[in-house]
Structure formats: structure tokens, C-alpha cells
Length: 333
Length: 254
Image (tube, rainbow over all chains, first blue to last red; front, side, top):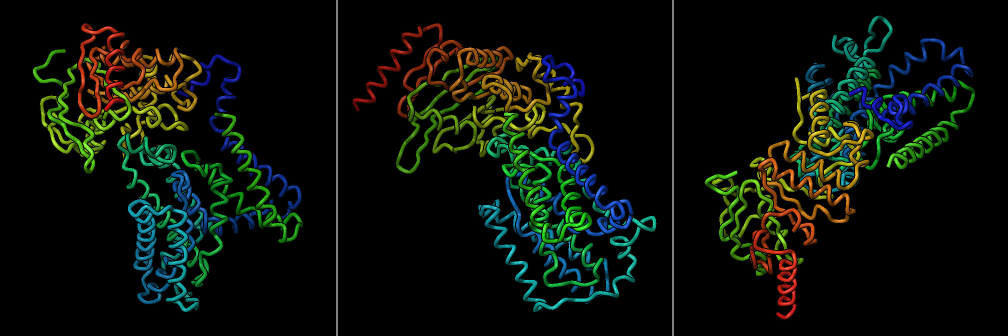
């Protein structure tokens, strides 16, 4: 059906225009990324033409990138999860505490991912079976899990410097081909898998359909509650996997680990063109949104502005991009 | 289109909500390949009756047979699995999704590991568009968002989808509400296509003109009872309207 656009008789439907219309969100955000990098490279060629800055991006992007991909499912449903930084925090404590206790990376990993899954499951059950709106339910669990970390650690950090000797450590944060951080490969592969599930799998199809018209989805026999719960579980497991990268990179667990990723993660999803009303979004958009959010802060400093500009420019980009998307959606009505 | 048992048979259906009796002693049959109009004022019990057939409500008393077998549908999913499908105007489709995603919602064609067979879904949607949905305009493709279709076209998509997935009884709840004359005509044609395929429909509409045009039989509900039944051959449109008005006035008096 790639010829469908070409058969279109009116001038507005020339193949190029149809292609642009279908991929207008993806094209816009990729153009934004390219524009930013043109500015960065012109203003700070020394920094942006060397590999080092890209290497540091590849280390830090997976700390929140997978969470942004997972959040795309939830936002497409028309729901929200505010608790994933706390889910990362508590799963991270489970990882470090069980590693410190057992000296087994495998045990720590399994318990950590299981914790993330259970936290997601609880969110999903609160939203579907008890019927609490997700924004309210996840404000509750956000405090709950972060609070529990504070209680069990009494605010103290846990060092796990001996973890670098575990062979699995290298699998998560080692170097591939001598210079690519392993977590970046995880992020790319995870993103591709989630992207395939989003648009090319029955699961993603159900998510899109539900986010668009939940009553219709129910009538079509879609297991609405089950799909929603699975989305929250994917979010929880992604938060747990992300924190495995974080605590292995730092070889230290802080009681505040995971904090600070909430708004940047959601900003990446919205910059990527996923609609807060549900039913519309793209994983490529979120992926590029993650790259943009991660590039901004170092970019702002590299081109000679002070760090005080960071939030201002975040705000500018987010506001302008969501306004453009809203206008695009209105025009296509 | 003959068969020993009717497609749908309801015997002695009663439905009460608390002390309020909404339906009393409903006996009705729907045969293969016929369109039956269900007419009545607001509050006559039409929507309750429909919800019993589609499994939303369980009757307080009475029996339902579908294709000769006793059924007790417990939810919409169960009744759909049996071959009963309701098409509601506002609830049928997801407007921001592509035509092919709408057609296959809940019925996805998949290959390995549950991944969508996109080629098959697009191909079958394309065939359905040409043969059944009346979507002949070149401006509409399988990739078009359903929100870009007209109201009548959307009804056509919903009806064609139900037929494609082997519904035997399609319930159309006020399908022409708010549509223009040409759009209404389009929906009535889709409704006739149900009969042409040997399938059956229950057609609910306030507009007697639309109903008279399309139905083979008329069942008039009044305050929870079946007040009158007519074959199309035994009744004129004027007589049908007179009956409705008389029932309405009788209702006003009591």
C-alpha cells in the first residue's frame, strides 16, 4: 500500500505531501534535532566534533531513555505515571541491598526487575480494579516507594564498589568495541523492541485503540484492563532496568537515586509528539525527544551560555513543540 | 434463507430494576435474512431489550435461543463470540486510527509472536472498502484516519466490519441519527446489504420513514410490552404512524 498516496488525485495528495503528512511528527522532531546540532557544531566545533561528548551521552541517556519509551505506552493510553522515579529508587535499593547481602549480581538483578514489575502491577491494579485516576494513584505510589527507600536506608547511601569485579557488570555498563557504553546498546535494542510492539504488534494496536476510544475498544472485545496493567508493568520493569545501569555506573546507591528524571522523561515523550489526550504518538518521536533532552544541557554550556539558561531553553523548546503539534492535529481534523 | 429454528428467539423475557418492571413477557423471533424494526417511544424498553440481547443485562426471567440453542450471554464479548454485534454510532470506531487498524481492532491478523500481518490487514481492508463499505473515493485509502470519513461512511465501516467477522445478527441503534439525507440513504443501503448476505438486523430508529423503507417487519414496543407486530405487506406507512400516535396518546392518558 505504499502507492496509496500516489493514486490520490488532488494536488494536495502528491506522494511527497502524503508522506510528509503521515510522518509529520517524526519529520518535525528530527528537523529540530538536526537544527540543534547544527547550532552546537558551529558554535562549539571543538566539543561537538570530538567523540568524547557523544560517549558521555551514551553513558547517561539510558538512565532515563528506556523509561521515556515505556512512558509512551502509558501516555498513549491517555494515562500518566508519576511514580517511575520512585520505582527506580526502590528497585535500585533492592538491587544494591541484595547485592551487598548475597554478592550475586544475578540474584540482585532478578529481584530488582521483579520489584519493578510488582510496583507497576500495583499501579495498574489501583487504576483499573479500584478505579483511581492514574495521576492520583501514582502521586500516592510516588511518595510511597520513595518514602520506603528513605525508611530502609535512613537516608544513607550504599556503596557497591566490589560489583565491578562481577562479569555481569560489564554486560550492563562495560565498553563494547572498546568505546561504546554497553547501556547504550541496551537502550537502542530496548527502544527498537518497544517501537515494534507499539505500531506493529497487536498489543500496541490495542493501546492506540484504547487511548483513542476506550468504550469502542471494550466493545471490540479488547481486554482493556489487562492491556492497561501490562503498560504499567512495562513502565515498572523499565524503571528497574534503568536503575541497574545507574547504580552499576556509579557503583553507589543514593536514597535519592532516580529523582530528577520525572520531568525530563515526560518532556522527552511530549517533545516527541505523543498526545496527552491519548491515541496518538510515535516511538521514533520519543527516541529523538530523548536525544534532544539529553543534548540540551551540555550543548547550552558548550555554546557559551551559562547553566542558568538550561531550564529556560528546556521550557522554550517544550512549549513551542507541543504548540506546533497541537496546531498540526487541529489542521488535520 | 429458511431454517428450522429462527436465528433469535426470545420467550417470556422480563426485566425489572428493583421494583420497576421495564420489560414484560417479551416474545419475539428474528429469522435469517430479515430486517426487523423495533419502534417505540423513549422509555418503551427498546434499549433494555437490546442490552439483554447483547449481554449487557441479564433478564429477570425468560429464555433466549440463538440458532436454536439456549444462550445466556454474560457480557458483550460473549454475545459477539456467538455472532451478535451491536453497532452504536458514537462508539463504533477510533477516529484517530487508520482504517485498517479499525477494521481489525480486536481481530488482529498476526504472524509470529503476535506481530501484525500488516500486508494482509491492508489488503483485506482495501477489498472491504471496494466491495462492502462503499468507499470508492480515491481520496480515502486504508491509511486514512477514520475521523476523516463522513458519518454515513463510518456506519458503513462498522457494519462491513461486523459482517466481515461473521456476525449473524447486527443491531443498529439509531444509525441515522444526525445524518444528512444522502448520508442516511447510504446507511439504509448498508442495512439492506446485511439482508442481501442472508444475515439479519434489528433496526432501531425514531424516524418511521427510514424504518419503513428498510425493514421487513415492525415490532412496536410500548411501556415494556410488545403492543403491535406488522409485516411490511400488511401495513402502510400511514397506518404505522397512526398506531404510534394512538399508543402515544393512550400513554399520555394513563
